[in-house]
Length: 150
Image (cartoon, rainbow, N blue to C red; front, side):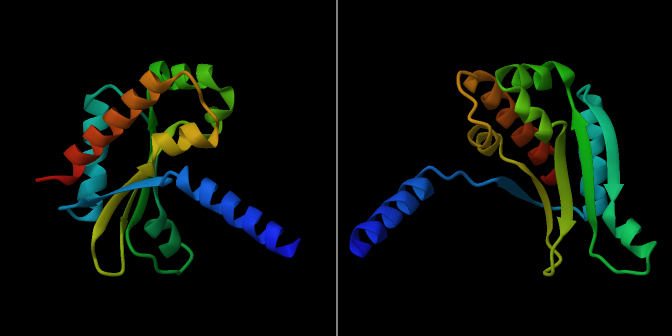
């Protein structure tokens, strides 16, 4: 009996793992964290996206006498594409608007990170909306490469 339970748990883990999708996309930047964030914000504004907020966690940490490596979040979106995604499954609204994280790691490498749209699809069991998901994936990839590449 215990052997059967162990086998069932192992099969369940293996099948779950096989369908797992990385939740974050991380792109290394050739620029400083501030320059990467500035570049990303400028690019999305030029493309007609709305910037809802830019949060400088390093600055906020300094305000309470704590230190933090450069860490910024830019919250942005496009109601046309976001609404299409919410029409697929309204619960996806918890993950909207889109966000990017620009951070510097302990090795002084700068990263631009964002939620993987395929993970969002899996998380919310979105079916029949591959065209929208693929469009979002392509746009986020293009924007992140434009902001991080020389």
